[in-house]
Amino acid sequence: MISARDLRVRLDGNLIVDGVDLDVARGEWVMVIGPNGAGKSTALRAIGGLLPFTGRVELNGRPVDTLHRRERAKTIATVNQTPTVPPGMRVLDYALLGRTPYIPPLGRESAADLAAVQEVLESLDVAQFAGRRLETLSGGERQRVFLARALAQGAGILLLDEPTSALDIGHQQEVLELIDRLRAERGLTVLATMHDLSVAGEYADRMVLLAEGAVVAAGTAREVLTEENLAKHYRVRVRIIEGEHGPLVVPVRG
Image (cartoon, rainbow, N blue to C red; front, side, top):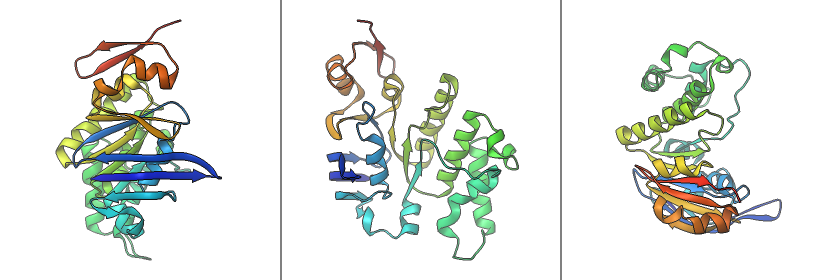
């Protein structure tokens, strides 16, 4: 479970996240949306303990800033929008990075670590790429490998920053369906940022709309994705069409 209260983040003296309150229940998928510069990625990084903040953030009832780095990595796994990958790194080696919290200093991965990574690679259908370099894979394949590293951590909480931003519509759906399936199978709690509002509404249990660093709307997709909210905070004209799983947002020319 994730709980944030009065979360504030300053970067270079500028207030980027301004008093955010946020809750994500165990097993829930919450999408954070908002226009560019709203503070979505910054809030996510602060919740993951990767940026200094004021206020309070708790993971499973424990303040994130009191967790040892290894303990935090066993609790929460983050997939950044553009993960840094060393040149020439192979899929297996990258996925094994997720086992770092379990490997003693100056130690090596154990047979159990290798088995855990193999199981994750097979579940994501990328085991056949174990010996290949990441840069040789397609966008959708790389995204599954990024997820594999996160899942190999064994964390119950996933933070996903624009997990489909570089993917075409087919690979977007593939990755999101995969995340949803793994969430159900493993009881994962997911907090994600996303720009595509229709896609976000299709998969989110709840949504949080940020604008200028603050929460301006929260609730179900139907409660948040309204023509009024989007006109006010995105400065855009849209038409909302009822979809099978959530509202579909269609831009309307002026």
